[in-house]
Length: 419
Image (cartoon, rainbow, N blue to C red; front, side):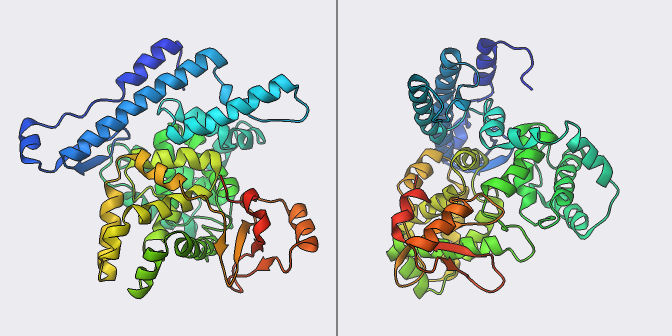
């Protein structure tokens, strides 16, 4: 993917790919809306202040790039894979792995350089490991086998292709549509329980832009749905998404009580904005460069970041939201803000302040553990042991058709959703 360029040449090439945005003198004087392309080819509208913010962010990205290249030079190209602290390691190696782990977490929260993002995501998310469990020809064989098949999922995919980021210089072309279709149709046959759900088209489209190859984008989509996200988010009844909505409502009440109380008085349901956030992983709501920063953390730390970011968006707009008088005002405030969140550091700094210690699902504060096909925060045997000993009645069913959300007492909270 990276050709035969040396590290130094690659570093220079990377710096050149992050241009400084320069609005015209007329635009600066009039402070009018200007249009420009972001790093991923999307046309962005903003005023000169937005451009200045983006330029500051891009300078930080360059600085981060220099840090990553220095680490690669000193520790080796794949140093970030040496972060597992195993009991079989010697003490000196354990310390080295722990240092790498701490360094990596901090670096990822500050952003992975765009040129390194494909290989870092692929390695740290588990996609590389998942791909290694099947023959090399798996993706090619799968797409060839299902190319001419017609199902309800393929019909919906064909309907959604032209509506996926219209106007993008590559995605909205015949080539882009064909690549996106192969990824989505291929996965719909890999997992018939999920098939296809609206929202996945936006997620897969951004993965194609980042990963550059269809096959890598396919495996990133697979690891997202099978290991990273809460299970059953994209099944027919969206049960996992309903669970996320319930959890987020309780988090908002606990972490932002003034906002939650005011929204309740307006009869505003957070699902009006959060459903799209959680199904599209913010890809339709935030600028693409900010979305990529959220995904950097998502692929390393897991689905809890979605709750952190959603809380941060509400918190950053607290004063304005408290002045809203109608449901439409709330939606307008949230949409206007998210579309202009060009500085991911502001968003992620606020989101990092929301450690999810407990969630109120009733009269007492409890921790939440998602258990199912997706990533488990506690394995099943550990859950059974705790449920039979210290915890009274650990299972909580949101409704008869939803998967169980296992609810444990407060002593588990440091092991669950905390950073």
